[in-house]
Image (cartoon, rainbow, N blue to C red; front, side, top):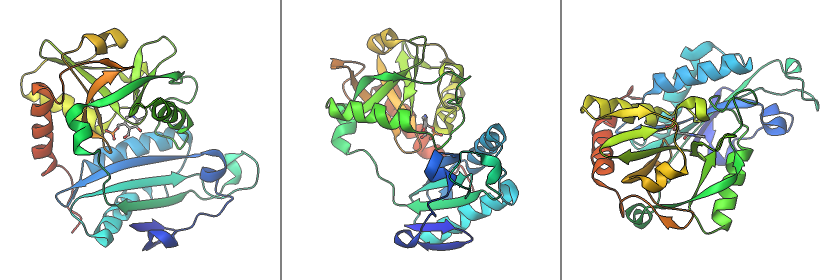
Length: 289
Ligand SMILES: Cc1ncc(COP(=O)(O)O)c(C=O)c1O
């Protein structure tokens, strides 16, 4: 693992955050999770644009601007040196006192971690993930808008905990209206009668970069691919169900709350999208060397 912190690149075990950093004390900060495929940082500019939006929504000033952050990502990826990797880019509010006031934190802190990718076990992917509907709801946009990828991941963490304690693999989060928002750290897709459907961001989904790529690739292939409000019914009734995310990749779902759903293992549309995505990822994003 290589980590960029406070202007230098160090080994993971050496990277330290001061306890008065408000990212640690209050979850006050924003982040991105990005994949490196074939020596290219996947859709880096799209990730940086999403980070830029999150920065504006939270009033965090990106030190040196987007261009400086882009160089940080490329330099850390270069230092790690592997063609397949995972990047965690964090911008915290920085150090302040023991009060929540962000205006007392003069300088945001940029941290970039590049490490090996941790993927789901192949048997899990071939049987499909077990999803569990969480008792926690995704917050509405007038709380902390879930479209802002902030360091406040307690809802996701607790939903994941509930799912794991119940013997499931991942959590399904509904919004306050009972519509599907997304999984704890991934977007959800269903395939029905050959059409691809995913909840709109206004239902509490993060505007995932993997999600966007899949919608684009499916449309380029002439498939119907739409953002549409979905309920648990739509998952139960689907021909195929899968999750998408930088960490998750494209992961088939095999059951919801113990009820088998979709195809056993990846269905034909899911398989097609996995292959299309893998081919696209070989070319999508800047090389770091
Ligand atoms: C809450 C949440 N939803 C969805 C996603 C998927 O987004 P992306 O494809 O940009 O990784 C993530 C990140 O992985 C996430 O944290």
